[in-house]
Image (cartoon, rainbow, N blue to C red):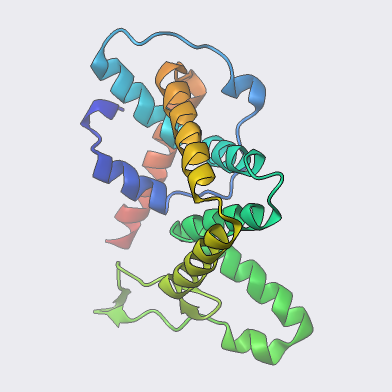
Length: 209
């Protein structure tokens, strides 16, 4: 795959739709084979490939860096978790998995309440489901959960007086991510995994026709 042809918009769309429930890559693989890119094109291509392949590792690294910055402020740690959760809700796969697990847990306690948490039926247009389906979490629109968690986390940031600290920690986390993604050499496993996911996506699109 030629990552130089992938735009930032395509990258964001892919990260939004791809499955984030997979475990992070092993640390031995994550911290190995660093080389200096020979050109800007190589650096850009390597950056996109690594951001896509090690997405879970980078997300956890940023959350850990934010958490380490607030060890003496419990409210700030809760704010970090809520902020990370609100961002994770933007991913389709994570939102669906979270909703399904939450519904199963509630079903063990109250089946009647779990029935109300089911998402509404997907509208059917000309014999097939709509391609742009809305994402629901526990029967409610996704944007509602993102808004609630973002508002609560922002309130906790203000109460804990840690806005400046979170900006520095978040900037450091992003800088560490960019440096690692730029110098980490994409291995053969990453390339094969990318092609495999591309094939599955193409095959799903083909089957929907």
